[in-house]
Length: 457
Image 1 (cartoon, rainbow, N blue to C red):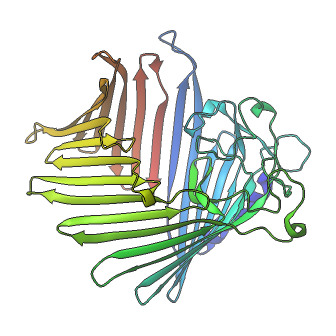
Image 2 (tube, rainbow, N blue to C red):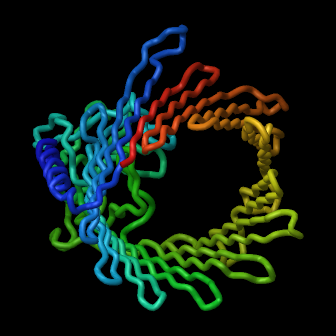
Image 3 (cartoon, rainbow, N blue to C red):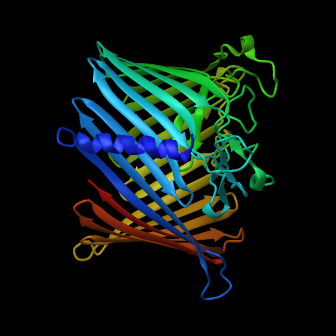
């Protein structure tokens, strides 16, 4: 989709919105985000790269129908547009969502998290001439239905999605393998075309569906069953993410095989996973939550959470995970003990019931009667001794709030080295207007400075 078409479409929505303001309830927010990235730290005064981003969210409610628009702007123009429609049809709740976004490449993918701004570049081609024109493409349509009948809640999420649309999220095996840092400067994504091949530079659409049934027994136990077809994990576009993404195998062609399924008339619908969640079980003063996941060709995995209070002195929570529950083999164990301002967490990462790491956290209120300040001290240790330490201080004075955190890392010989200090300053002026600034410093110099301004209406 070209920017002109999308701009005209959004303009039409805004015109319709203003035309209906006399009868509709209009709410929303506008946020401006400014990121300043130092081009070097070798001298006291250096140049900065500026990344200016804006986000407009508008919701219009008219006669029980809510129309929403979530639009993101950046240096390259419109980066995404999410259009929502919510309404109730008797006992049926409907959530209809269209997602459009500009495809981006990344010249250097991070190990995890979103690609940093200086490495992000637009790669959309709207007319198929092989030249980037920063076009915005259709990414997905999501329809969520919820029905409550006699205490039983039925949910169905249907997703029609471009499984090739590139994301800039590092880690997790997402769709950036064909937009890697080696060739990103030459990458082009043809948003106006479609084919049946996956992992190429042309959109390929697939369908996924998630069915959820939940209810509660007379004793207060909640039971939830969830079945997913051709859907798993999360899907990412720039600055937004969505629960569940369509499996690329559920398209008109498998892998790079050019032979379509049933002549391309249909896409396969594959069983992806089954989740069973039981929560709120009370037994002998202990509360239990159990979740079990079955994925074809993978071992059955389970997670058990138990929580109780010990002699009114401490709250204890234990989490046990296993991917081989049929043989009573456990993968990990974590125990958290909270007593007043002190929290102690113990981690067994290999399931041998020997703790491999501990985390202790102490929260204090300094000078509680006059000018109070919140101090949190966190210490982490492993087999080699103290591994990390952080000190967080929070101060609030009227409309002004200041938060600062300083971190240290162990060198394996009992010494701690400073790793960084961050500052966050925020001002809430009331009447829906707020201002904040964040900056971080490390031994290598200043990090990214972020300034946010926002207003709600």
